[in-house]
Length: 230
Image (cartoon, rainbow, N blue to C red; front, side, top):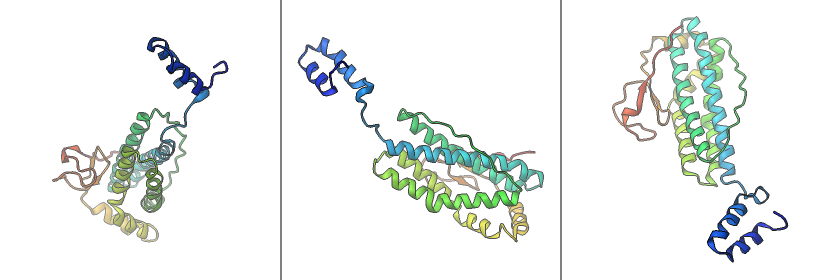
């Protein structure tokens, strides 16, 4: 800027007629030499972390489906598909907020770890409980300082949708070891009819009759989950 600091340039522009001052104001504001501290820096980094976590979960659940179907665990495959869709809704919500903040999302390469269905369901239960107990509480704590309402709201949606099935997840975690075959048999005997709220990712195992418990939007935002086929 040829010896002019941002302050000097703005002061000088203030003494000129409007037609001459506007180009100088624009130059002072846009100059890379005087870039201001990025707005919502913590919010952006936090949403990126949430986005990548939910995309990783979405892709893992998708990858678990064929393995479950191959050993005739149709209901477990259906659960994996349901959670995959819910995680994708969370990831899409974070992506939308990040884009509103003019933020570029650098997509990480996600290394999928797929094993037998018993190992897959154990890993899924562990991850779900981690999100409920530590991951989302920590992210919400980080977001509090900058008070970006939409970021906090969508993070809360994700946390609450994971918490919907905490009791079932704890049971799966408890019996997915030595008692896996018996637990899997019980799951396969259940009648499942999952529906997902396309706004917040809430998952319920029956036809919705009221508004969403999490985001409070109309029940018309729920969509049935189609069963996967081999």
